[in-house]
Image 1: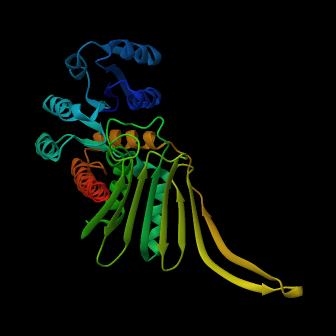
Image 2: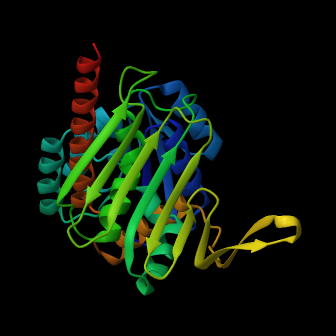
Image 3: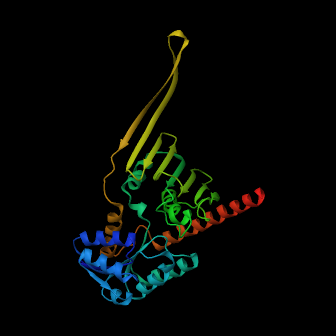
Length: 330
């Protein structure tokens, strides 16, 4: 498996990024791409000097592994087809459209003994991996995830929980290693008719308190994690790859002449160096390493199922509260 034969299924924005990364890797034989839009797949294939396949069956017969970057409703059928063909699979998030499909897929993954990785890309963000190491020295009390975007350019085929918050749900479950005892969620739908802005709280009996905010109606792109610990406050910027640790903050009022008062605040701030490496490159390299070493990826099908389960729970609660609010107002 020194030269793994790879194919990409889906020539949309994410699929094209997978093609770009595979084309740049040594010891990988990037065979080609399939998309139902043959014109797009040919354009992408020509860009990377690979073959554009007319049928998905033609592609999967020629490769050892695939990246699946198609619309979510197609995930289950395509992933099942690839597993039945004996391929290793990197499937973009969310794992499937429904939890029932995810459960059936997990059974096939376990029976296949093939590498199956779900594309929760933020797990491979160097800022997040550095944060895990940093937090080993802290007693975490609260974590606040914020994932905000403008409406233009957002994926309006699904609501904001499935589109954006799913990333931070996966990070929260991975970071805390426990499922929450209870969940609350509230949302707004001012633009699309489905949830555009959602705030969810995950409560754990022995801390931390976790808050997740996702928006596609905010005119600034933000991807951040704020951590309140006994020892410090951490300001984490996933987008610009920065971690700032505020160790101490003292505020005081100082008297000046003529009765004036000046406020002064002092703090000790540490900045953690974060490697500037593309998360998708790290994600794909991990997938290929797992194939070569015959090991389970860090984002398994079970992880994908758990993220989907909590996505659905939060969506349900937010929609219920929104409906109740509308009825009470009317």
